[in-house]
Length: 114
Length: 112
Image 1 (tube, each protein chain N blue to C red):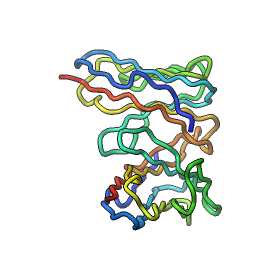
Image 2: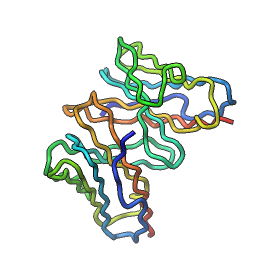
Image 3: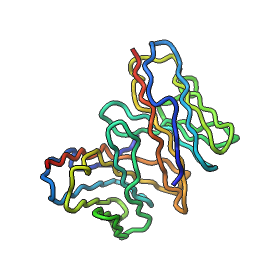
């Protein structure tokens, strides 16, 4: 499976600021996904990022709040904008690989907003 | 958004015991996946199931894709302390271009 890294691994931020999370994959992948996992909860898809096109956002998530870049087939960023304490979560990227395009996850970015 | 019904929510067992957890859905999925998440880590794929009725093993883990394509179960045999963690099921309707729908997770505690 692909090796996926995320930066930063964790951060503590002040409300009203923005944080950009990076996801790097060691092989070229078509689809990259960004998920949010709120404390003690399951994973919820934020958006799907394809290289060369705009990200597709799920219901309840908007581009102004979570802008995404996908400049090439191995890298993507997610920005959490104008943060509030409710944005405190783990943010995870995943990629599809293999014959079934099974999704594999990065280690996550733990965000605490004060 | 839609979620899968995963049960039990938590389990407390003794080392050496077998564990069973399952997921159900009101709609059909073409792929079922089981992940384990350790504290401070991202989910790690345990087993992927692609065909209705498929039974797949990975060491002490066994998972089945329900024949109706609306359910799946995961069994862990002879549990050990390192099995502790949260187990998530996930369903996918199409291939990799389709999003994953997750269960709420089963938190497993193994007492030595």
